[in-house]
Length: 159
Image (tube, rainbow, N blue to C red; front, side, top):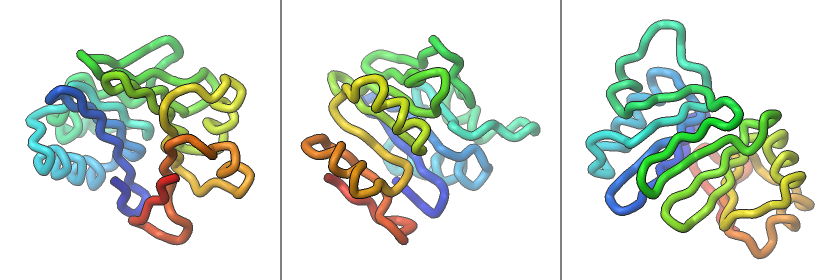
């Protein structure tokens, strides 16, 4: 789901759900709560924010999941039965996700893209937080991939 600069990824497996959010602002949290309600999720198993939490405590985020983490340190992993996330590398915001048997790479920026390329490009599918160049699209050929449509605040391209 994408709305303006807010982006969320929901992982689901056998009735369980987890959330990755690119933003940690109160408006993103409100929309994530609406998303949970729409999906019939009482609480996410865990929640990862790729944006630092504001200094003031926000009960909205903590009400959606426990744990709620705004930074994964190298080697740290969030997991629950069938769902997991870990950092791609120490120099990247990229993530490796697992939902059941599916493996996903989440590459929010080009720094994460380059880390992913150095690591051998494994996994089932790729989610990009940026519009790829023609050369980057060629590299993704034959792989399930999603990225924002150029100039769109709500459209997604699927390869």
